[in-house]
Length: 247
Picture (cartoon, rainbow, N blue to C red):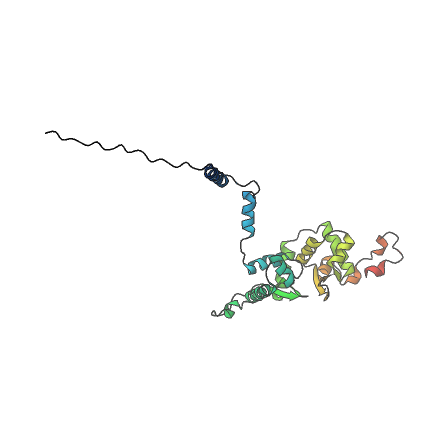
């Protein structure tokens, strides 16, 4: 018995719709844009630097870093402008640092007992803030500087010291004007050696006035500043009376 098999009609493959040229162009351009950096964009290095600069920082630690290298008292407005923070936030951080250095931060925070009282303090002077060695450690620091750092003064330091000795009390700007050079680092050296000290502060400008210490008298082997040699004979045509200008 023969069984007839009805052949299946041929199945034609579905026709694919043609892709518009605009779609292909757009896809290709998109892929190219993803793989190739924009010519007008910033370089990867500068983008990384910008990201680092934009990182948040601890305000109190930033204030510490600035005050550690500051030669003059820094006002709240100056600090706030430098750090880009509100003046009120800077004031609160300064107050917390004062408590921290004074050893009262733990008690203020509700902890048991007080914190560690540091050998330095954050003091408000002439409308600004600056780090100072505590008074009870002045002698220790002075002895350390004298005994452990006995190197000779540079010519610049000697000249600056001479100006202060004869013109005291004198501001840093006046010393710089007389010597016609920047004297910031030299002033720091002389302060560190204990040869000069801060005598007073101008209430209007905040300028600090410097004078010599008893240590300088000891080093020179004299009892008072009146025993310093007269400098008028050493100046050109000064034999007749420059003396009053320097005493």
